[in-house]
Length: 401
Image (tube, rainbow, N blue to C red):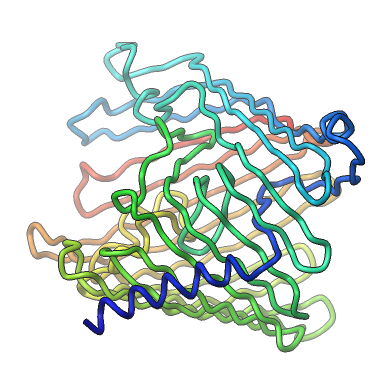
């Protein structure tokens, strides 16, 4: 009875906060526009804002020891449009779509099947990824219902749901809501459709960012998936200027998941510590992650933030991961360079053995002209099992408008 009451209380708290708040939610994305208020429906549509992209993407992977084709990849073109009306009495409408088309595909035996490697990653050539109604209040925040982009600690990409972002209290940002479906829509992967989350029961979430002092951000959060898990967590980041031009950023995060007896999951937790330094145009840092022997308790089921490009086993049972990273920005040339190297030791639940996986990431981002950029990522994964070792290169050329 206590467990049932706890679940009901968590739902009521979140739903009550949504209902009591005269506010509104998440407008995520690389571009955010200030809309001029309209005095009529016609003016709202006429003065709306359009943004989007046109891009080319390619990836090529090599694994000599794998049973599958040891060399494969594809190239694809994509484009997206997102339109949002101007605000009319605080309300606006948004609609967006993303399309991808295969340009080339290669396997080691020179096959080019209709449903080959491209279809494994790009499951839909076209998808509606934004369709929302938004209400915005200048003094409180905004509320969004429908298909929308989201970027939280354990909920990412796109969702169908209701989200609210509240900024009524100084130094405090609240993001809360409920998501019923989610989908991935990006250059390197597109979901077939928006899939139900947690058997249509969805996911409730509450994320708070409080800055009591300029140098400290406290980020408590809570995720509740009915009959699946309840996961409170806390992330703290301290940013200090040690001397002129030299800055330190120290991070610590812990999340514990308590799972439902019928979920098929076990209770778990995750600890993440990080330390980064920046001096003018250079950065240097590292981190350490520890997963409970029983796993993460399902907290990474609907999205995650992690340091690696691949990171295949970073959230596996009893995983221990360390990494080092460095970066340098050549602002005059519009070029950003990055390097990351780390190792994960984890429990293989099938064999009962502990295995190791090392990963090297090299990244380069170059702004060719304004809004036109080229990005290159090289990842090399070295595993105790040679069949799981591979290297991949990913290239993106995109123009944003």
